[in-house]
View 1 (tube, rainbow, N blue to C red):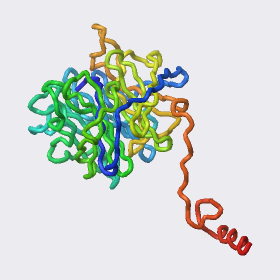
View 2: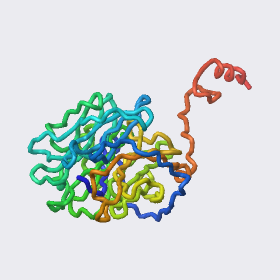
View 3: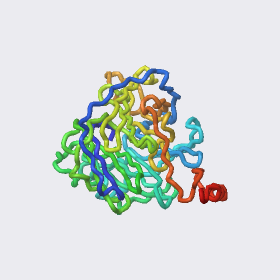
View 4: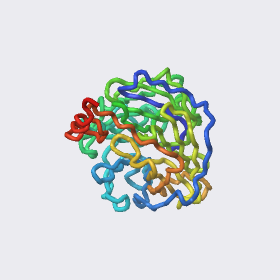
Length: 373
């Protein structure tokens, strides 16, 4: 499934039954970041003569946990999902293969494009992409779910059947990419899922809405699947809870440059931000993961760190040379993009007369000192 595509779909699980997402119709600001806003911090994962791409990363209790897809032996382009941990994003534990397809009639040969959150009840939820087994070859993909209590031992949901099946996408043409490459955010008690939809044409791009009430298992579309945006290939989304905005970083299928988008809560594009190619070590860059917390929020609303696939141009002048793909990391100052972020308004506490967030003897003293006046 080593493609950069242009289609996203939005799915929601649980709390937003009344949510409404409309197509982006607003004019938005185009920005190019200056080099001083970007710090390329080098290679994160390099497995010699093997390829690595499409990471998802979270920080839990001081440890960065990363899942991504890659092959197992040189020349064998069969994707497994790999896992490693780090405390500094530089020194990583030995990568281990933690998920592959289960070899039944419901999955193909690849398992890739993971997105992982650790929602309520301390369960890790991994949504990943695999083909329909009767097609194979990286086409006609669907989205699957596996769960884990430790991030390494995974159980396929529903005997490996898809949670977002290709058959739910209509119309579609056999032989196109299908659906996949999702991002998941746990927000307002629900699972928000954004994913590629290229079931009809692998060169199209859109995002639509969906909603589920069963804890992240099914994602029927909101409002019949309204398109949100044409977006760069293989993007990752995270939420900025104070600014109440979404940020996405994705790659350009033709130039292999990276761009960011800033969205409002109803997914209107606010800003499109170009990351200059001179900031990158290699010419071919795509398949991004934004480091976030267990729920899919950014770690900071001033700076983000991304991990992305990068490699050189091959002899034919293009970027299709998988065995050279490594995972690189980059810090991006987004404070100028986000702008001023209002401080959250605290919920008033009944009886808290001095507004210190608690009710105690000082509130009582304030009350009696003014009694009868």
